[in-house]
Length: 403
Image (cartoon, rainbow, N blue to C red; front, side, top):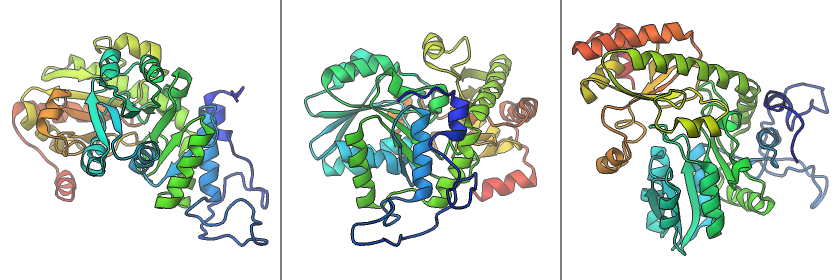
């Protein structure tokens, strides 16, 4: 099933063709609830948009094509995709092994939503293959890893964990949201499922929410589609259409995000008042060799801490002007986030700190602006933050008040 085309060509063309009715080069938005059938049991592939929709199907074919896989299964959000995966593979009494550093929503879903239904989970250091092997029990039905991890960028060796999971007869899912198929192809490294919040880099413009699951297992795909239809979590056609537009420039955007983030990370490392910087492209990154081996590009997410801890971090985020204080990543605009109080606030403090998510950690999603302008904004804000002062424009005060 391997495509002869490069990733940029596939992003533009995989699974897509001009509309047969009009010749439109862009897939139309099929904003329809239902589809007229020619007879009982005779239809043109779609019956009701909770089960399938032509625009969503086009996106699914495109995303599957990026990984030399059958069409993906697309969902209303990334968390809807993870929820569908878990309830497809697990039942009461079953067990998940999950990365200890993981998106806060994934932790919340497993611990606060699914645990009362009897689905148990263990959060372990998946950078240590031996620790994963020890955590697997006879009840384990899924190993779920996130690499690079949100927000510390900790990496997991996908091939190593795939070997452990395969040896135990347990499927491996990889949340590849940070790198997308442009930066990492989990299925090629032995994973069974690639997981995406398409909200992030794949759509890339802060315009939609969405999620997808990609696998080469046709039986699993069939079951995922049944679950999606049964719980009603399919992506909306307009969101799918916008995401299709975003995918077309994904390879270009991800390379530019990576170049910009590298420049910003290197500058942060040199700046007094910054105590640590985490980015896989830095020579100082603890897992630099794995990053070189496993990644095509490193994407645009970095994390750092400033002198003065959480208060200095708060002052920084209130002082930036070009960077937007927001809970998202992977968008064209640069976004700055405080994980401890925003994306990971539901995780108990002890667990957060054990995973390296300190109260002073700042996550920066480096956008597509001129990197000189991003650096200038951070330079001014860091000067305010580390001096202990505060300076806010009326626009910034309005942003903070409305958050």
